[in-house]
Length: 475
Image (tube, rainbow, N blue to C red; front, top):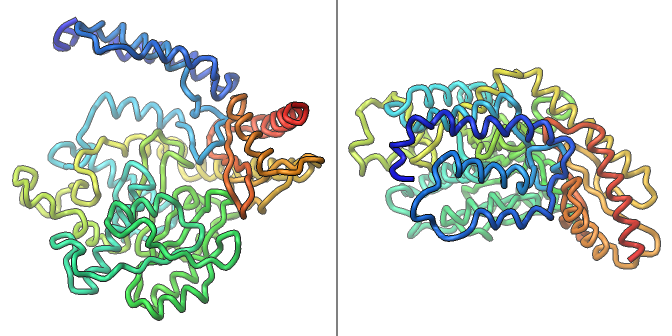
C-alpha cells in the first residue's frame, strides 16, 4: 500500500469498520469481565517491525479492532471502579467520533469558529451546572491535572505581581518561595502542577488536624498571618473517602489575608448537582480558580477537563503572550475567541463537542439523576459492607467513594491480606477496583461514576470479594 491519497475513496469504509464492531462491543459490556488477562497474548499481534509496505487502512483497522475489543480493559463498562473513571454516554461517544471526523483546530477562531463558539457555550453551561458565577473566565483542558495547572499558573501570575514581577516575561528568579497551603487531602495532580510550574512538587505545606488529613483551620490562619500573599488549595472530593475541605471557611481566610484560593474539584465539583450534597461545596463561588474533570463524573471520553478563574484577565496574562513571538497566529482582533491564549495548550482538539452533546442530550435533570443514582449506589455498597461480618467500613459514605477493608477472623496481618485481596480482584477481572492507604491502613476504595452502573454491579462487588476472601483463606 502506498501514499494514503490513493485511499481517499475508502475513508468512509474505514470509519465503517469501527462502526461495524461497535454494536456487539457495546451490547456486551454489561456481561464481559472488565479485564480478561488470558487475552494478553493477543497484544503480540500489534508488535513487530515497522512495515515497509503498508497493509492498507481496512486491514489495519480490522486488526486493531479485533485485538482491541477483546484485549482492552473495558473501563467504559459498568464495573470499572478503579481510580475515578467514568464511561462515555451515548451522546458523548457519538460526538467524540464526530470530533475526529471534523478534526478541528480547537484553539483559534480563525481556524474553527465552530470549535471556539461551542467551547464558549459549554463553559457557560458548566458554570450554570456548578452554580459558579457567570463572570468567571474558563477554558477546557485535557484533564484535571491540566485544569489545576491552569488555575495555579494564574495564581503564580497573581502572586508574582504582588511582588512587582511579571513572572511570564521574567520567570521566578529573584522571587522568594511562593507559599502554598493545603490539607492532607491535596492530590498528586496539584503537586504535579506545582512541579511543572517550577514551584516545587513538595513545597505544598499540608496543615492536617488528624490522621484523615482534614484541614486544621487554626493552623492555616496562623500560617497565613505569617506568610504574606499565599496560595491555598482546597480539595473538593478526597480520593480515598470523598471528603471535602471546608471551602467556605477557607474562602473567608483567603479574603482576610489577601490570598488566592484554588479549588481542586476533579470529581467533587459534581456534588453541586444534587441538593443532597451541594452543601459540601459552600463557598466555591468565592474561589479565585476552580478545576474539574469531564472524563470522570460527566462521562465524556478522555481527555476532558475544565478550569474556571474568577478574573478572566488572569488567563490572558498567564497564557496569552506566547503569540507575540508568532505573528502569523495573531490577527489584531482582541475580541476573537482564541482559547490558545487562555490555557497551556497551543494545539487543541475540539473537546467541547462531547461535552456539548451530553449536556444537550440529558440536561441538568438527567445529570442530576445520574449523580443521585450513584450516591444511592454508594450507600448501597456501604450498607452491604456494614452488614458483612468480614468487612469493615473505614469512613462514612459521603459521596460516591466507599472506603473499606476485609477483616476476616483469624487474619493477623490485615494490610497484607487486603493487598493480596486487591491483586486477586484485579486478576479476577469481573469487577475492577484496587487498593489504597487510608489512615495508615490498606483499604479498598471503589469509586462509582459510570453511567451504566446498576445495583446488580454493586452487589457483584460484595459477591466477588466474599468469594475471593474465602479462596485466599483456604490457600
